[in-house]
Length: 604
Image (cartoon, rainbow, N blue to C red):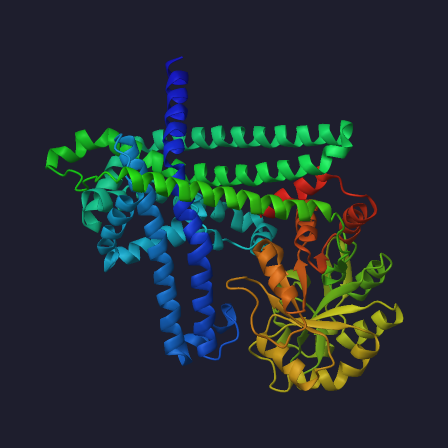
């Protein structure tokens, strides 16, 4: 019973602190979303453009380091600016909740002044700790503080899929790494707060945080779980009520369904904003709560007291500020309502192209083999996506992996063998076996089947200088005649293909979405779906280009991409995804369905 009362008191105290500090969270979070993220993105694009660099990805990081020192310096400055903004948000929210818990809430101007005063603590070794903690520990440990900037830092799903494919090796390592991140994240939780509130040097703050969190480790874990569960129940219950009422109105009062849908969607958007605010406050509440319990016993013994003095604001300015904030929120809600009316009034969705990934669907064969192509073509995909690599003798073979070990058992790489040697090897996958085909064989069979291909030109460091030229000379005529299209993860290959054969329809594969679509001659983009946002898709369409999303293997991801307006879905489960798409195309979506699709997209 005592534990139950303690848990209830913890929840009640948290929501009281959250209520009083929510305005400050809304202000700083809105400033970062509306001002800082567009500013950092725009400056990054300017830096790249100034260095004649059209894109930023993993394959051009080393050339930038080696040959573009000023661009490198600019990018490092942008990273520092991001770190400082994260520190600003962290400090602002910490001070806000700290003084609310002390029952000395501060005026916004005073909070901002105190926040900027703390910037002197993030130069030198402190900036390294800041980068380490915010960019490596918190994002992967999932501990509370998830700003709009940190939301950009995530592991794409295709990497996670690869890791789980070899789960016996990677899952234990991932689990261990996650636990280590959580442990380190909690043990170092008080470092920055102590530097900010008590002006401790970095080493001393680390030592004290490690010591103070030792005895409170499981208490922190319990409270973190308790508050997260309480928040999830509150938000989940609110979702259910909104959807239930909307469905009830659609069933019994159809004439009012559109109006109620607009109200419901606006409530969902407000609820999501509240959820994000409360989720962020959880971490700061735990920090301040822990400091409040340990200060008298651990800090006062060495005569360290908070060095921050609150200054009360002018009543008129406080009233004026509240009016400005309230008016801004009201205008935003009105704008959201108008957007929601337009969204719900236009219930049609565009039919995307359906593309079979690596020539298979629902494990009907071994990837990139003619046998699988023949089976998959019967399902009538718009395109079959497949992969080609250059061989030792400068021919082209249909294969995704450079290393042959996984699919053939032979411990060699594609570029180490001739085409004839590769064609003797057998691919084993999904309980199927088939010979590795040459690209000529695969292309011929696709043409016989009237099956259009999406050809991925893969690259290695061993490719010949004439690789793209050879590809164009040998296959351009057939590709154009049969309406095949091409894409590649190599920006240079894409640009060379468009320069030498502009008639070809060529796309650029983007494994990561860092700063939006690059400057390119490509006709379309292929992007990993978990890195996509509706804004990115809109930017692509503004360039009059198409966007293909991969790998779409679940209903939630398919509906999300339909909502975003993706032009093509690349999938391993063609039959399943086709059924989902056809259902949404042939059945008029209810307003409840549209609310659900919007929720999927907004939470992505």
